[in-house]
Amino acid sequence: MKHVSLWMIGIELVITMGLITVEPGYAEEKEHEPTCTLKTLKGQYLFGYITTLLPPAVEQQSLLAVAGYRTFHGDGTGTDLVTVSINGAVVLENFVAPIEYTVNPDCTGTITIPAAGESLYLLIAPNGAELMVIGTTAGSVSVGPNRRVSRK
Image (cartoon, rainbow, N blue to C red; front, side, top):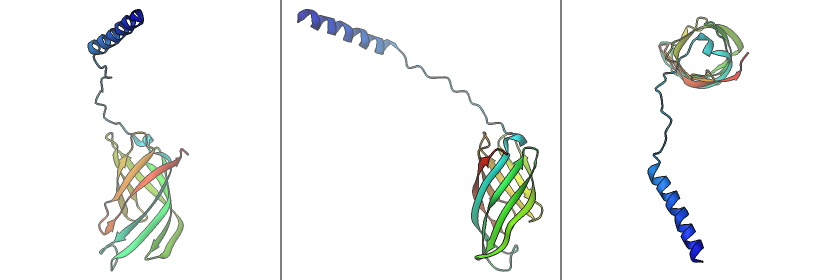
């Protein structure tokens, strides 16, 4: 019994001393700024949001609901396929409109929808899987996520 107790104390001392002398090892984190390009946005993205339209975009304040797919071609061009309702009445159904977009190295960018006269500001996930959009056109207040659902 005495032999086993001494053996256990010896093991405990070795473990304890090992824990005391070992410094925690952390992987050195490097500050790595995300880098995005036009090719970061490639594929089909699902989106939908409700926004408020304000004068001068409309005569009186209105609710706008939009749902659709946004397809980026990886070269600064793409298309939107949208269904739109204003105050609950569908005004566009499966409407296709070309878009143009920019992407900055800091993973921000813009979308322009010439047919609608709309401009949007983008915050892009570095892997391109998702982006947040906020409207920048006077009279339109919109914000919402766009999530990639296909790389084609």
